[in-house]
Length: 76
Image (cartoon, rainbow, N blue to C red; front, side):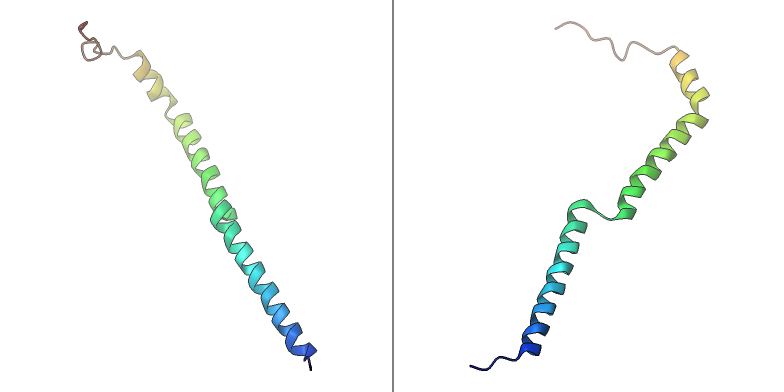
């Protein structure tokens, strides 16, 4: 039986690269990319900035007298 070492080596290298590419795709599907994780952090910063800028308006809403007729229920 005659084997071609170069052909077998090329097949093995192709299998290794395909396996590596599939592993990378699986990791991206499972964990997301670097930019996906940064998007969450940016959203948190924007949220904190929003509450920091509008904290005086939020404090005014807490002091505003609420209409309790909407939350009062008759006993059943």
